[in-house]
Image 1: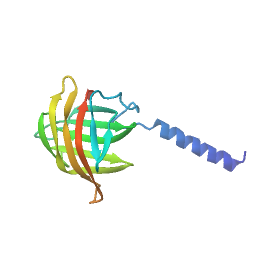
Image 2: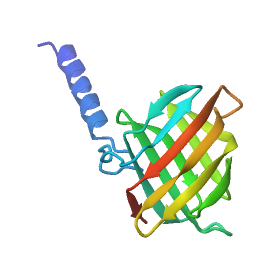
Image 3: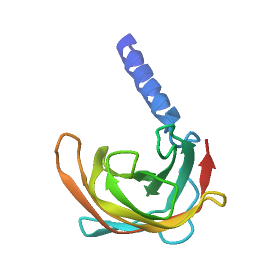
Image 4: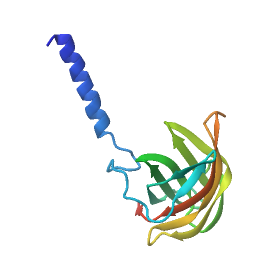
Length: 164
């Protein structure tokens, strides 16, 4: 094997190793959470998506007046497709891009679509048992005024939560 070939093989092996070891900061185990019980579904521009797993993190935000938030992470096919920053209370929250309401994001192919309008309504918000249920819809737009995606008919069920 030539020196050049050995170098190329070493670089490829290092790249694979680094990629395999990379962990999602919101999922430090690097594993897709176990399947969610119940129905967690939504539509993207009319096409149905079923979430196969989801988890939530309850944390102290430190920004008045709410001071606490819930982050919800949802996966389809082992890939994160939704990330919500919501208030830990039942009722309707306006979809926006701030921590005073619901900040909803759809992700596909590395592109993010942040909520411009819409609503998330929690019918169940049990931070003790770690169970959240509700509905959602929003129009998400890429940063800088890019393309949009319409997220509709969302039914949220999360049965797994950690606390920070």
